[in-house]
Image (cartoon, rainbow, N blue to C red; front, side):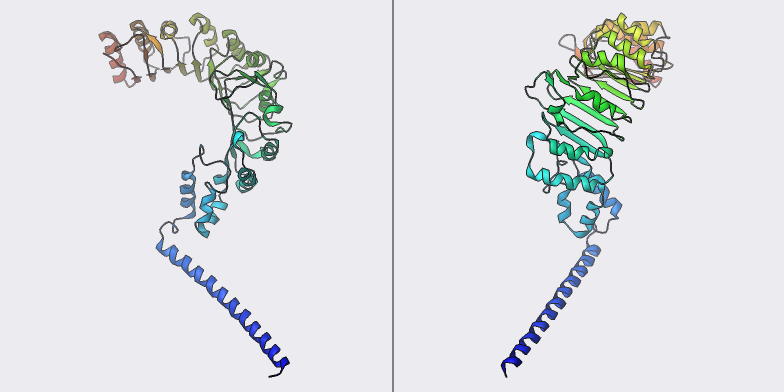
Length: 416
């Protein structure tokens, strides 16, 4: 054969090889499809309805461990199982909507994964957990660009020696959210029980969250000049203001903050004075249903004026309270039924200095209000002295009668 004929033959063979390779690739794709169909018939998991598979995936997530954006953790690992699961995971925004970031442990992997997670979450409400002393500005800028979709925001300051006064820029820099329209839960807390740190940014966050329903604020304060403008949160239902001194916040709150529809209020006697509480209640006139006192140190006589505007209150709780002080509250409530007329639940958690006179006052209150009272619960009693707690036969008989009438009466302690 001539050279030209050999070159032509070579070209013909190359074309035939390419055609055969294309055909082989198609056959392999067809075989993969057949394998998937076989697996779908054999594997019960693959046969699950997509809605049920999605629910299973949601229940595998642990927001306290696996919610840090990563290509190596959940739910990213589910993308490596099969095409069916990949399709379900990518099309389920809720799987990507819980994001946990510890700014003291930033990695390149997190920086790369975060934009992808936010994109896959689409318009689903985001739940963010942010921990650190100084928030990375680039990451916060990316997060605030999705501010319209943030439904829950949990900010934790770690246990570490901190300056007494932290400027707003030291948390998330110069970038800040302009509007948080669907934010319903805001939690800002210091992990150090002995901390007393001020944050300027708290009023600013509240001012851009008009639909906030729950606000938890613990072991922190704000700057004296931070709250100087009228601030009304018309939808806030639950406000928990925790431990340590927070005089600056309450001083501003009494003059500028209004919570007209507040239903649940938790306050610490270490964080405010009785005058602060009275001024706040008078300003907002909220329809409170539940009032929780932590570490009660007020004189009982000072508390009664605060009860006057609480005509809708049904639940009263005391945490780490001196039972003798609570006892002085129970006696007037038993004698004057116009005080907190709708009260039907009383709870004490970890009370101390519990003596027989307290049980007598408790039974007197419950008997006087037996037609309305539904629950009386005492959790984790701290006894006045070592040994069992003594209840008189008369008190035990009274409690037994109330239980027979249907009252939820629970006392957690070591009795004789």
